[in-house]
Image (cartoon, rainbow, N blue to C red; front, side, top):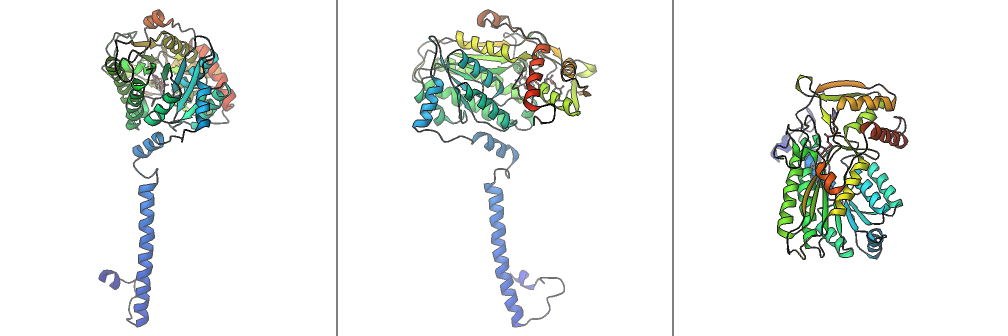
Length: 431
Ligand SMILES: O=C(O)[C@H]1O[C@H](OP(=O)(O)OP(=O)(O)OC[C@H]2O[C@@H](n3ccc(=O)[nH]c3=O)[C@H](O)[C@@H]2O)[C@H](O)[C@@H](O)[C@@H]1O
């Protein structure tokens, strides 16, 4: 206080010691106390209440995880039941997690078309433009698929859904995707791909009857392997990204729940899936956007000008693989959290078996968009990308009847047609 009392309020003005001055000092003190309270209050609000003020990881995670809608009530249950109603004689009832996602939307629509009961679940996080997810939701709504807005970590919600509908199958596609983003927001991968998977499996193992589960693993589990094509028998203990590591962990977690609880589990290793309604964070998508905008696009190459290539797989082929996996999934054997006998545990590659260099992908896009790309060739960054992927699909062919039929040229043509109709000729932006 002494320090404050003797300090001039304005340099050079603190000279007289009159009662008026003391009054002024007191009123200044009162003002100071008042403003200090306001200031401290603002600090409190800023640091402890605002979601965007904490560390980026935490705020990002809270944005992702806490967005669970209120649910319950007769109207909610009615919608859930109506969406899950089986309309064909040998149909199944499927809970599709990540239903507003790229693969989730296509799989949900395909299941609904053939008369299966389908209920979607999605947390509509903002990893990429949520407007696109809402547009997919609207598309699904028109086909009779209801998407519950909630997170796979919300065990109470999952239990509630299983109470309303005894799902025969779960198509688990909710995940934190993207290889490179794992360096920016590692905890979102742990949250969705590990904690979220465990929450889901916990609820499935206790459900009565237990559903059969088909879920999305990834070609990235092959990591730094150099033997091609990648076969399911190859080792998968060289992940190059945290994303890959969480998908690999998912495969091990699946093993555990199959072993202990008798859950029927099928993991699908998707190879760079592309197509209409795709993900804006993927290269083919943002390359198209940036080519149209006249922006330069970074094309990665490996050491010594080595080609970087992907076994790009068209969405309709992937959907057939997903349906094949659901249709061949055996029943889980446990009930009420107890195993009664051995259950099915499977892993399949769903790829296209013909890797294409990224530079060829760009050439195809240039032709389809009728715009020359501004290519910026750069060294493959050390951020989780691998140099190439190439699937051996003979196992999926044999056991799921999986047979991809779309080459990259044909698939991209369909993507570009959709892109232009959805966003317009580069005038509207995809992000
Ligand atoms: O196969 C998979 O499992 C994975 O496929 C994709 O991952 P990725 O193959 O890396 O797909 P993109 O991000 O679209 O990249 C495609 C190719 O373009 C290259 N690329 C990417 C970005 C860029 O700026 N420049 C560039 O040349 C990448 O190195 C890669 O070879 C998905 O993003 C993952 O979620 C998925 O699990």
